[in-house]
Image 1: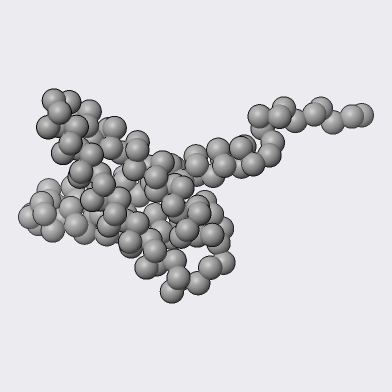
Image 2: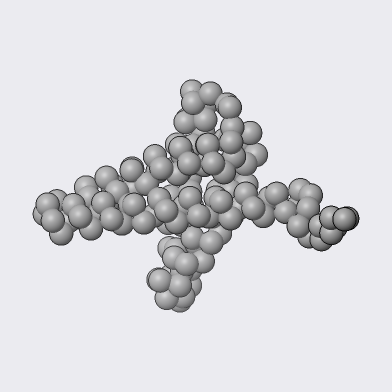
Amino acid sequence: MNKPATPSWLSGERARNGVQFLKFAFVGAAATGLHYAIFLSLVMLLEVAPGPAAFTGAAFGACVVYLLNRRYTFATQRAHRETIPRFVALSVLGALLNGAIVGWLSSAGLHFLLSQVVATVLVLFINFVVSKKWIYR
């Protein structure tokens, strides 16, 4: 019995990139969930000030992003001494870019929440490309 042919859109580099991007987005969503869980727990249960609680949640989220993307999304063997500094650099640049986009769009009259959504999507794509081509390659 012949095996049915795989549709062209499900094979090749485009499909691998699409699956990898979905993994990247899933990892980011999971890390964001952890970030918020820690943030809310610290503020609401332990009465930690919001600023330090947000920083702590973000730091844990960043660790999850780094480790899961390294192992699950990009499956790299590159040494941590090479990938961690690059990851930190991208994280800082991503945060700065996010702030700049939200600030610019908000000052142009777009609602601040919609500005944040636009910035999140743009930074997500940029982070994926840089992670794939520079950090974990």
